[in-house]
Length: 161
Image (cartoon, rainbow, N blue to C red; front, side):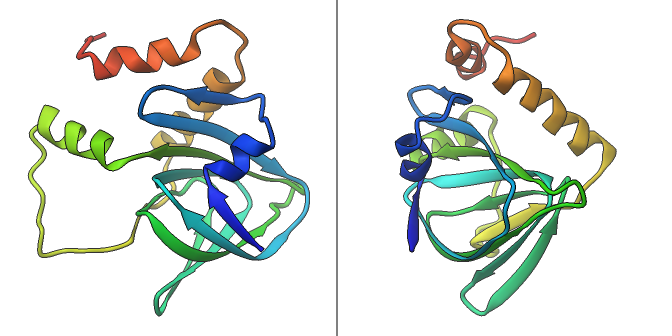
């Protein structure tokens, strides 16, 4: 079975979704291992792995990611396996975005890119700071208040805190 991301999550009518004009965020939790998942990203995605591990295969590369890791996947096809953590849960936060968002971000913050380096996957290893970021994001996603997406849009408008 092939999962088209983010459509798969929208079809399930998740309750913990934040959606703006160019970003879609969802909190995903499972209590069963998911083996041999074929994923087709129609958007780029940043995945924050909260619990469990994810085995990722693309092209001729295999990567194992653990709780606390953050990784970025470009649009494309991937094979994945989700493995439950010691507490019997797999949990991740997915932030999907399109080319326009990336190009606007690069322009706004004047990011200089080394175009000689190309990769479909970029990952950051777990640290206390990344775990704190994930926990804050989870609290925000699970909070109940109107117009969650409007707060996310503030940063896109250049509002400084």
